[in-house]
Image (cartoon, rainbow, N blue to C red; front, side):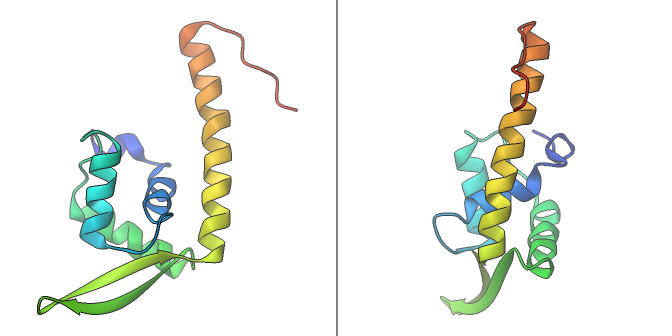
Length: 112
C-alpha cells in the first residue's frame, strides 16, 4: 500500500507500534509490515521523518545505542504519546464506522 494512502493515519500507526515497548526505527518498520500482513511496507523516507516529527512533538522519545558495532536510535512512547494514541484510536473507530456505513449502505449510529 502506498504511503499516500495512509496520510492522516501514519502518526497513530507509528505510535501503536511502540505501545508494547521501545523499538529502533527498522523494527518500527517491520512491526508496521508484519502487523498489516505486508500491506504497510513503507520506505525509510516516510517512516524516519515521521518518527523525528513525533519526537519533536513530545509523543515519543529516542535514545541512541550501539548494537553489534552499529549505532541505532530506539524510540519509546511518552505519556503524551499514550494519550494521543488513545485519541487516535477513538477517532479511527468513529471515522471507520462512518465510512463503512456509507460504503455498505447501512445507517451509521448517531454520535452521543
